[in-house]
Length: 113
Image 1: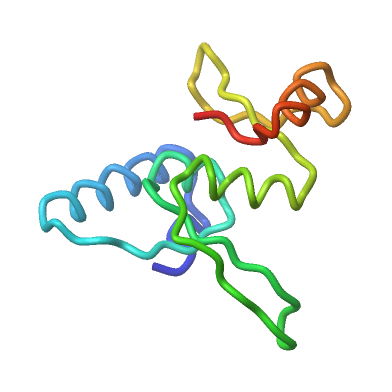
Image 2 (image 1 turned 30 degrees about the horizontal axis):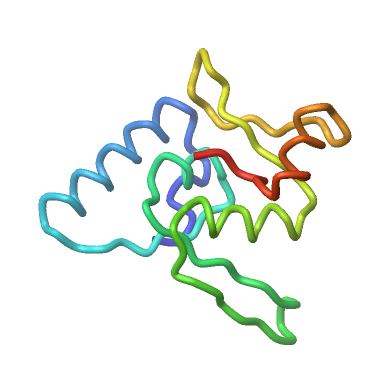
């Protein structure tokens, strides 16, 4: 699926995630989903492929990783850390240079699990 969350509001994205997961689990199949919405990927995915390159010039895929390993690789390249909001359980980007950002980078944990 190529960017299934494009033009969807939050409620529609939640329904999409539940529908895709249920479809794959009931049929015992894997789904390949490409999306820029990290919240969707976080809730939908069990495993992750990371792509690198220059559009139209070269590219490579890395993985298939577990979520923590794949997201750590991806986020480390961006220099960004994520935490899980304890009240909503949603992923949140740490402010660059914040205490939490520095702590996670020092531990090499760019992504929570």
